[in-house]
Image (cartoon, rainbow, N blue to C red; front, side):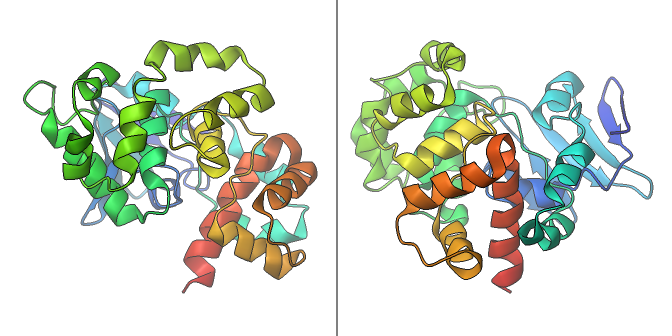
Length: 275
């Protein structure tokens, strides 16, 4: 993909492989806001504003190296889309969500975010995560995502007050089960073993585990199944209630590109079919 990195920005010239709306609105991330026609993203303690120009998108930031990696700009998505385009069910989703890219997100932030996401809607997820940021804004640069050490200092009531509801007990427990370094060490595990490790954690079921695997660990051989994917499967494949079986059937079809296929299908199903 054609782009150029500067000291204070990145210019992405290939709009067919990069669209901030597609990337940020496809359910993989919650640390963003839309401000008029522009998007701002604030993962960890970083910040970027994405502005569309006639010939490019500008990613305005003090940390271009970070966002080059975050947006996975070195990966050629034209090859991925070409590999998937021969599959009939993906033709419309690939056209609809042509600018999707799977982000490379911080493992700890991804884990906490997707525990909060369980049985929740995006508006409320973002509100809860912003409440967690606000609680530590005097300690952190900007409204940074809190560290495990910071969250570990809080009791279960803190998470309830932040709006986490029943997930407060899961967050309180998971912070005592795992730390950032252990998550990093998990990178050496194969996907099956890593998934089993994640499901052992409080608040992490199969779907949350697959989201953390895909959006945090960058494992392409997973296929998170939620209501939208189940609906798609029952509509285009066969009636099936068992989400684990749906997951396994789709991984058998899409292999190492399962995670990419999931994002195109999810975004299309939720955005286009819903409308």
